[in-house]
Each structure stands twice: as C-alpha cells, then as structure tokens.
Amino acid sequence: MKYFKLNDGNKIPAAGFGTFQMQNSEKCAQAVTDAISIGYRLIDTAQSYYNEKSVGKGIKDSNFDREDLFITSKLWLTDTGYSKTKKAFEQTLTNLNLDYLDLYLIHQPYGDVFGSWRAMEDLQKEGKVKSIGVSNFYDDQITNLALFNDIKPAVNQIEVNPWFQQKQSIDYLKSFNVQPEAWAAFAEGKHDIFNNPTLKSIGEKYSKSVGQVILRWEIQRSIISLTKSFNINHMKENINIFDFELSDDDLNKISTLDKNESQFFDHRDPKMIKNLINLH
Image 1 (cartoon, rainbow, N blue to C red):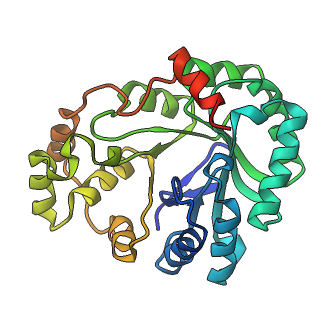
Image 2 (image 1 turned 45 degrees about the vertical axis):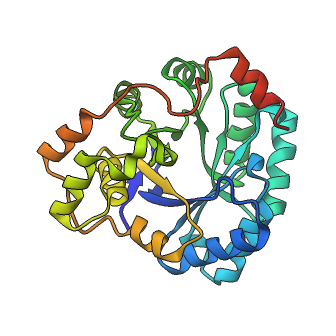
C-alpha cells in the first residue's frame, strides 16, 4: 500500500474503502471485514451515513491490529459548534467502539465551522484524533478556516472523477499543503463512464479495467481514492492499482474528458444547503 504524508506528519493510505449508502447493518459490517482482510487499511464512514456501529463491528470482527488501520469519520452540519462537536465526536467513538480516530472531518462547509474546528483542535491536542480536516470545502473556505485558526486542515475530501477533475482546486490544495481525497471516483457510473472509449483503450494497454485506470489516475495526481462495494472481487480489483503506471500521454487523454462541473450538486446552491440541513 502506498501512503501520503499529511501536513501534521501522519501518514494516510493512498487508497481507502468508503461506506456511503451502506445502511444494511450485516452487509456493511461484513464488507468492512472483507475489505480489511484483502488489504484495505483506510476505512471511511460518517455520522450521516448511519452505519458507524456496523463499521465498528466490521473493524472488530477483522481482528486486525487497530494501530495498523486508518479510520475516518465526519461531523454532520447540524452538529457544528464547539460543544455540539465535542458531543458528536464522543458519540462517533462510542458507535465505532474505538478509543481514537485517525481522521475527523467537517462534512460540509456550513454552520458554525469555526466553533467545530476549535473543538477538533482540542480533540487532537487531547489525543482523541490524530488528524483533522474538512470535506466539500471550496478553496476560499479552507483558506479562511486555516488562516484564522491554529491548525491547518490536513485533508479536504471532495468530489473528483474524470468528469469533474477539479484541476484548479487540486493544484491549490497541494500548494497549500492540504491533502486532497476523492469521493465519487466513478461518478456513480454517470455518462456511461465504464464504457468510455478513451478510458477503455487505456485500460486495454495495461490489462486493467476502466475503474482501475480511474483510481490509478487519482493516485498519480497524489489524490487519495475511496471506493465502495459489497462484492469482494470488486474490492480486490479496486485496490489492485499499484502494479502499473499511466504514461503522460494517458494522463493527457484523461484530462480532455473533464466537463468541469459536479456530477451531483453545487455546494454553493442555497437550495442544496437547505436540503442538506433537512436530511437530519
């Protein structure tokens, strides 16, 4: 497994297992156990996924050494603010049946993120979380948060896929020494991504699938990739991306696929903010 070094000195696996939309308790727990057994070391969940207890069971059932795993969860926007963040974090630890987290993220850039961030800084100083970061923050938002607090976010988890490559933001995050992490690497199959001729032809060169090409493309851009699956064969395929390297020509071809727009929603749309608040 390849690792990236964060700005706080901690190391994070370059490829991880995500659990979004895994709300079936038994299937989720088994998927996490399977993922760990075949080599995943980064497991990503969130308060709003409603599966932290299942993820915790999967971790426990794996019988794998805790210190060799990297566990991430996220704070939902309705629990922003100093005291509410402290309480939500403790509930997350309880749900996961863990003593500490490796990474805790503010899930959305709304609400009292400054109060939450100061709570997270204290949690890090107390040793309850090793690294702290954000998710879905725009460049100006993460800059504002970093410049007016003691600790800079270590990670920003954002949508990155061939249709929405986030070239400007990825370059900015790297220059600002914040590690980018990608959700929706496959854009949930939109625009028939798995049958895209460009991606298929690149995969054929290396005897790799379109999915493996996409994940390798993210790794070579120094972006952490997250994938999810209940199928153990797909899990194995999604982590088998470290035995080949895309050429500059391959990277240039993938670059031309960029539609430069989210495949899901605009985080600056007021309607979207209202919808997210109503999710809880």
